[in-house]
Image (cartoon, one colour):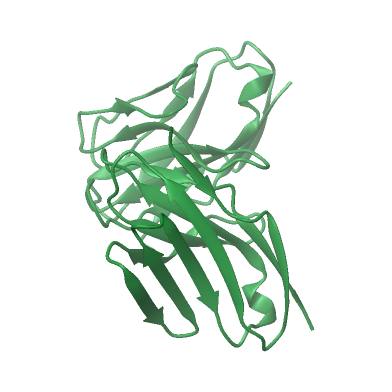
Length: 114
Length: 109
């Protein structure tokens, strides 16, 4: 089934631990994105990648890193988790970056940092 | 700065019509998106406007006024399944989406 998958679905993590959230799409989309969604706030862009091999910083990149070794995968790593990183994380993709490109979202990862 | 404003919550009756407003301020403008998000689920695309005017798609319509920095989403013949949050997002000059916090729409029988 075409789409975006994320893993894990949810995770409870101790502060200071390293964590990688996985994201895979099979639509051969060029652009991919990582957002966090917090209650009362809009989705906020963490990092993005316009094409394989390139990445860029979004609105809230501190404490997060990404890589884009191939078209399909776009993992997000928290090097040393802190409680303020408790959030729901959504991965998204679009055919390409640029005007009018509908973004397709994965099911999300609910992360709690204690 | 960049900002998207929309009401936090709205209530409407099944079968009725509801209009969800959104005002935006972005650095440059490359279009206005509306997404639907059911509780605990991912956002899904509803509409895109880049020119002034009304775009109709079944029971849902979206309007844009670039001069006023204003958009609305119009939902007709409301159904219980339309209970969800509706997210307004403006695309800036870097083709990044700036998101509003969402409007939670509650449908009552």
